[in-house]
Image 1: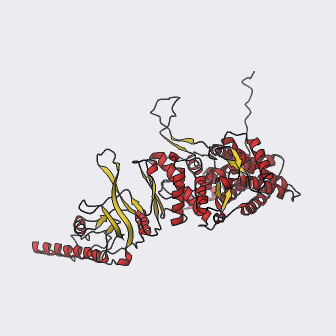
Image 2: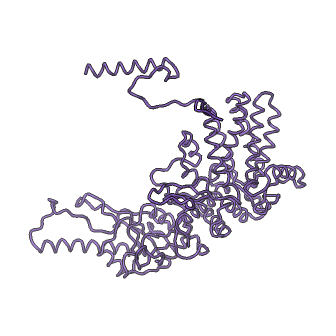
Image 3: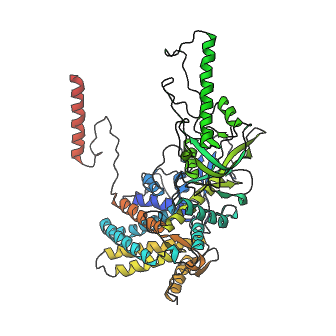
Length: 593
């Protein structure tokens, strides 16, 4: 029986133990997201004080549901100092809003964090045995180099398969593993392959994703061009459809000294009334002045007609007078297109963005096989439905667009993420980056090969680095056991069966988990494939962060107080004395001033 005099024993975490525990917590959250039979994670991002407490309903205003590692890592509230280090695994921080259309989507984040957690857990056991962190670091670096060599020996180029197209589709499906939105993974894999073949490694300018509530997911498709989903044709008098169209991309223009500024689009110069160069003494002068602008507009539009313009898209505006002239000549006008979409349109059609509308030539124009205005989602609170302008069937486009239908909210965001990951995975496997091309067997087959090679490498060591190499191999095996556990299989028995199947394989092929069938087979034959570069980056990042965390031996408060450091507050007495000298010197300076 406890008494008041008894003190509660507190568990004090020392370094690097405290940092390892923090990483293990994050790794535990992401473990359930690995594999085809993964589970989604719900993260509450805002508390609601006004709502009544209901045990059956989470008390939160906003929440995120996802199985994407990068999304979870970004939304997860990590207050520990290791938080920024772990989040860096998902890529560099993005300024402002993170939901930037076209933002590069990292792949393999969950795998990296899970491997990182396993490496640190193994390292912790070594530290408790008295192994120095430097020895662990040397062993992990040797294990990483062994993993590199093993992956390169196991990898196969896409062209070595009997059906390279089917292999690329398998890579795209693997990248979308566990996130089959609307059972459309098979269709989307084909679209991802087509997009990667056309634009290579996707970025915000070469690959756009437009999301529409109307229609069904099955209606989603890849547009060989651009979709302006927030714009419409600026006049009802203009045509709404044009085939074999020549497209002019107009970024704006500067009009002489009359306004000393940019007006943009097709607009009259902004003449200031107090401009000393303009004198209007009578109504006739006003009429003559207006005639100048009338003639100017007619000359500009006549120049567009001579150049063969069918569609003009502007960065800023098209005035009513210009709209009327364009409509009379059957030219479609679209105004107010933002910078990113204008760039996507130019790259899709092959147009050269023009600044001065009076200096347009046929060589500046792009081409679209079809330009059409379509009615889409109903506007919120209005009866009128929203419109969009589609530029499709472009010749050899350098920018394409995924048009997702029947999605909105978090489903749309998740679908966008998966499509981008799938396209990037195919591009990486094709060798569109500086990273090694080719594919590796999935389902844990590569990890088993790496673990076996590292254990063989450990036999060549005769000091404590051998322990670190074995720890690296055990951490790699734990990655495979996590896949099995998420599939409802016995982790230890599954890993043992995989090793036995690989050792006794007559065709010398690797063996891995085939999910969701829960069988063991050749991942290459079943289309369970990962890009070499993605898997290699997982190992490199996990080892680098693990070593960085193991190097952290203590933490110091970096805040600088105006009060002198008290005895016992500083780790070194010399630092306390220097702090006191600094404060006294600062006081003397202020006094003399």
